[in-house]
Length: 384
Image (cartoon, rainbow, N blue to C red; front, top):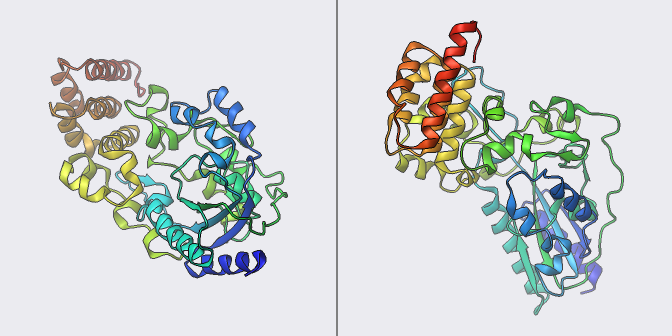
């Protein structure tokens, strides 16, 4: 079998397995590596220290597979648009996380494709990557002709839009590479930049994670900074705003895989119910989903902040229980205190006063700040 025939059959097999697109890139240094270095040096990586540790590995894929010659890139469209709930009790979760964990779905299909390739080429050395190793996937997807990197830093394909997840197979054989996608079809459009609710884009193609809702709700551990605690805009895991407004997603197809379709509990979550859900129930609910990255503590923290920002008085009893629970994580208690202070009803203030002698400094400080805010509100007639 010639190299051209092997490449053609490989692509056909990838599509048969359910991938929406497949392309081949040469194993070269990714063109965006210098941009990544500058991005990190500017502090735009926020608290994602692992990005600094892995920056040299991202310089060339041979750090992940010795002797690599080609990078097989694949994409899967995920989920579909679901109208937002008008209820202040319900939160929003990024579309990619509403179904089963995309890492597992990608991994299983990539391993099948790699097994097929090994049958065709005994002795070939390869490695499947499902967002599980420091590879600059978007750069290689562009080199493989699968789309361009838009102003919102997402890979965009004219037919599929940007609601896609990427996977890769590194192989130590030459395959026929696709022509890179050089054109940028964003034009003069700035809808993604203008729509960002926290102004996280420093400029086109430049995202500052320190202002990004996805960073705060997923990657950040511990209490969320006061500046952003009230700026989650209903999002409790990730954010899709810059993709939702992109014109290229207007006619993009919905995902075909049932496993990646959103489940009701993650498409329209009841945040008050989240506050009182016990550890075992959380463990069961998170199993096999991408939300496990943030864990129960991060999700309940986010839920408390959203309910507080929306002044949901019905959440006060559940927030008070989280704050008063001596066995609760201080991160959750601090978020509950902040939320109670924002809601500011008499019951909320009573709950804060009953907890002002907490033994945890983080919680004490959060309660003191929340009480100070309620005092300010009573004096000015404006939310603190």
